[in-house]
Amino acid sequence: MPNGLHRSSSNPMKVGLPPQELLDDLCSRFVLNVPSEDLESFERILFLVEQAHWFYEDNSVEQNPSLKSLSLREFTSLMFHSCAALRPYIAHIDDIYKDFTSYKVRVPVSGAIILDESYERCLLVKGWKAGASWSFPRGKKAKDEEDHTCAIREVLLYFLIPSSVVSLPLYVLCFCGFSSFEIYGLFIPFDIFQFHRFNNSPYA
Image 1 (cartoon, rainbow, N blue to C red):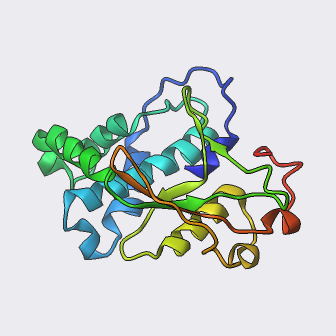
Image 2 (image 1 turned 180 degrees about the vertical axis):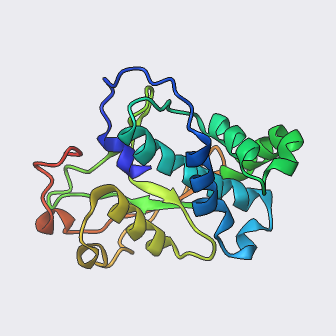
């Protein structure tokens, strides 16, 4: 959820739930109008709901001061109750969400370690929610997506670096490990600092 990094932590408390009109729009945009294969399993459906949740947090909540920030679990419940295509499965939502969270931590992750030319500084990202920690920009791989394609996509999302810069050779260093069953493939795009300066960036 890269765009959320811009949010100030000093926002006043927001208590309003999203109206039905907004939920209908999110359901139509992210769940209904997708290829049929994306609706073949609850895992894929919940990934779509998660995308809708990111959009809600990064756009709807930002633009409407009265809307409440929701956890993914809270947002999922609202979507299942409001979206006609998901409503038949409300009785099983607890099991569906539990299975999704178990599946989600096993999805391969790829990202980038971005160093300056001296290899003494790197760029880290941090979410806006309380308790968020610093990390390398990374994200879960899409179906059949190559590691380096995912790494480039995540760097573009977080830092708005020109794609011509990120398309530099990435296979310089790779290390893999396991953390909560997540698989990491992190790559170093060299010379990015040479082309793109972050001194005036909120991420610097």
